[in-house]
Image (cartoon, rainbow, N blue to C red; front, side):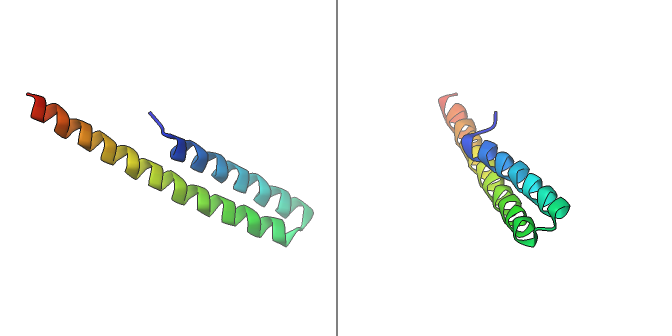
Length: 68
């Protein structure tokens, strides 16, 4: 299941893609740059969320093994 960081990261990526597309249509270079930055930040946040989730799953697995 996705955690908050993964969801927010995906949302930022979508927001960035929308800004980029609008910037392309309107010729607004600053909006395109903002879109690229939002998308990159979203990818980083999503990656952090995935790593955090995997660490949590690994800790749970270790706990389960100890209980046996």
